[in-house]
Amino acid sequence: MRNLAFRSAKQLASLIRRKKVGCLELLNHYLERIDRYNAGINAVIFTDIQAARKRARTADRALARGEIWGPLHGVPMTVKESYDVVGMPTTWGIPEYQDNHPKKNAMVVERLCVAGAVIFGKTNVPFYLADWQTFNEIYGTTNNPWDAARVPGGSSGGSAAALAAGITGFEAGSDIGASIRNPAHYCGVFGHKPTYGIVTPRGQALPGVVATTDIAAVGPLARSADDLACALDVIAGPDEIDGTGWRLQLPKPKKKALSDFKVAVIYTDAEAEVDDAVQKRIRALVRFLRKNKVHVSEKARPAIDSREAHRNYIQLLRGATVKGLSAEEFQKNLRASKRLKKNAADYRSQMVRAQAMYHRDWHKFNENRHRMRLAWS
Image (cartoon, rainbow, N blue to C red):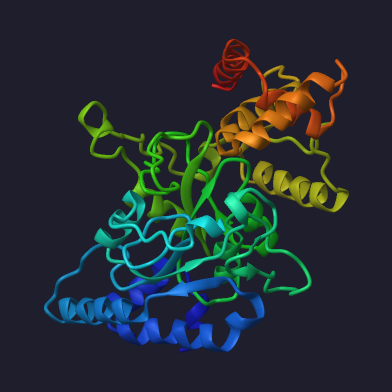
């Protein structure tokens, strides 16, 4: 079947339900592509082929009986290495965790399995998930499949590279500072960082860590926007602890036609300048929308200083990631913070300042965050 490996997950699931391709057949197709192409990009760094084939055969038998497990019935997929999957190591690229084999699946992994997915492997990450490239001492370097001399982004770089290379059908990643969005952009695939708190990260953590990290989220990467919507339906919702106190009820879209929408557009910004070529495409989109009677505004946004917003974000981001520092690194940054010039505004200065701030100061930045959130709302 032509371009089978590059179909969206929803298309693959449809082909399986219509018995145009078998679950085991599709899994083997991706495994053959891994044998052929993965060595050049090093995106998939661990597989459990025996368990995956067993599940794929079970999925085929279930379908023969008329049973459909869910919207992803039989779709082969991989997940970012940082997710706990029984039978696979979780290391976050950190050598000291090389032998960490979890005894329970992450909640997102469990929900993907309930939806029918066949998880056959894991994709590469940078050390501690903390880079915009993808390299660690355990699994080595992942390359961009479009150009092996370039990086695939990070930290879900292996996820995006595997999708772009057609060696997996679907992916799950994580994002605190663009770790889904950055590699999706670098590799030309789709990624979604969900609203904070609507998808439980339980089981996407280092050994012994159970507290949710501020700003961080887990979410899907895929080859279509439809796949992202399907994935969110599958994985969203609280875990068993939080679920006793709240439930997720995202509102259904009320708009039926394109002309029902109101669209705000920003062409460029002092904090994030946009190339002329990209602006040209955005302006072409605006002309198309207006032609189709969509209300487009170039002014509809709150009066927020984007540079100040970004500085506030860096303080919260690095205030959250400080827990990953060793005691030695933390003390080093404390000493460095005392040597900073008062007006130093480069990224490293902002980072060091954030990692050394008092909790009282964190509350100020948190207050600013929520004021901006309300202004955007």
